[in-house]
Length: 121
View 1 (tube, rainbow, N blue to C red):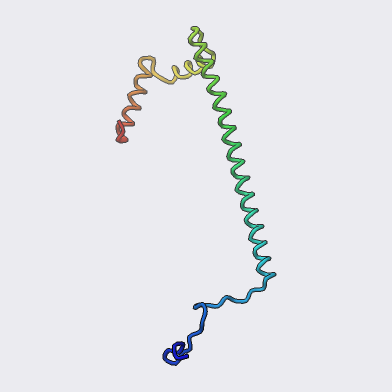
View 2: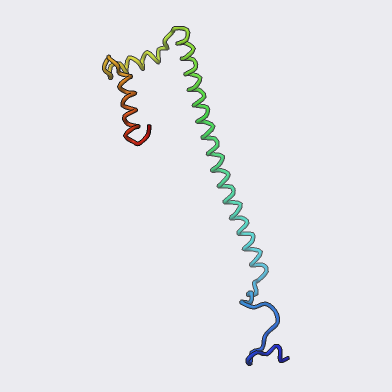
């Protein structure tokens, strides 16, 4: 008995620290059920968000594929020596805005000047 006494204090066998409060089992189960409901709701929202994200990306992919197909058709038409009407419209609109001599060369040089001023080469 002397081993258990130290400076007038009685050492109790078992765990040290706070003792767990006696929780009503029904209340604990109800909290667990509520937590599970909230978890399922969060999961459902997360999956809805991801599904919307996937569908928007799929729509963007379809639009890009259509655009690519249009450009392929333009290229094949130009390979045959035909200029598509869309390109003619673009060219006539660009020629009115740009000076007739060397319009493309100045635009390339201006791009190089912009990239070199940004520290890129």
